[in-house]
Length: 46
Image 1: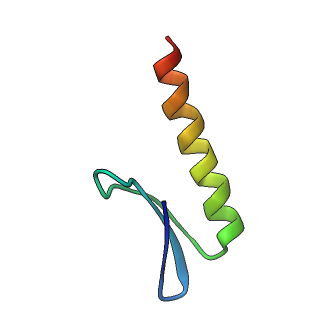
Image 2: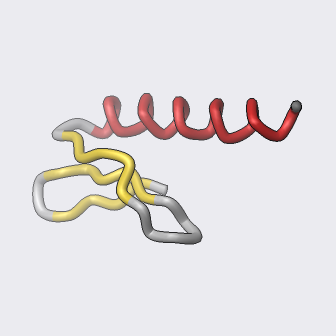
């Protein structure tokens, strides 16, 4: 999930609250969120 705190967009885990990055633009935060989701689902396929 992405949360906006002050002027930064923060990519967080919905379940654990782990921070996956802090970004100045929403576009960059969405890009990182897609990366996290890709690798999360990649592990489940094996």
